[in-house]
Image (cartoon, rainbow, N blue to C red; front, side, top):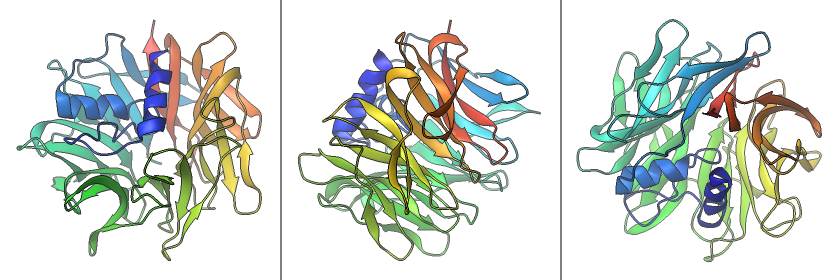
Length: 358
């Protein structure tokens, strides 16, 4: 299916930045970022299939969050139940949104250009993502209700992206550097600005999540061929640890909690299939299993160790899921179509993501 093709494109090329030849720079947690970045840099039309953002809770089940235009995608949620993501406007641009139960979806604007996407939100309501400038470049942003959208700049290159923010306001993501189109994992702080985090061997790295201790997780190619790519954990002390795989070539870490539990996906044989994993310092990388199909991926984990993501079924459909441990998997279903993925989870277990409609 199309979602898996985009995931495979992401795996082989990874998420390098936009406006250059690095067109796969935001597939934030699996299937979206390729579409986002290609659209931002090349102006492609929206998908013909309609997707809607959803919110799931144990009491209410899966709730359609609607849209402000075409398809919508929820990528993150905070402990107050505020969700963020992006939707397609009627000109086929992507636009960042903030959703609340009282006000619904709110467009967060841009940095002067036509496109934006929100990737993460903390409990203070600080939102991060990327937005295009008046010149058409894409820059990482920090948005607050009081101050609006702030351009976080780059490491000297054309493009940057913010993928997550912790409770202290420390941001992670990626940026091109001066004179180089390769993307480097970054952290940004209000006092220190933006700095690079290093890599596992090739010069490229991609950061996707950060916890309260400013430990960052992501992926980095081991060589200039861009494969294999391995998941990494980068501690605030400056140490970057290769987390390995489940026996195949590639892995990517997409979520981390306060206990340094890491989740993501890893190939189990050569390139595919890929399975969701949970990594801990004591146990290493554990396979979380699937709903009977070939592939799965874990996108986020909360403080209690509840994990969300997606899994294939034996029927070929792909559903949003919750794991509470290896092979302890709950099917959250879809909004009626054959594809759904869970992207974020609050500390109370409220889940957001997106699903194909009927």
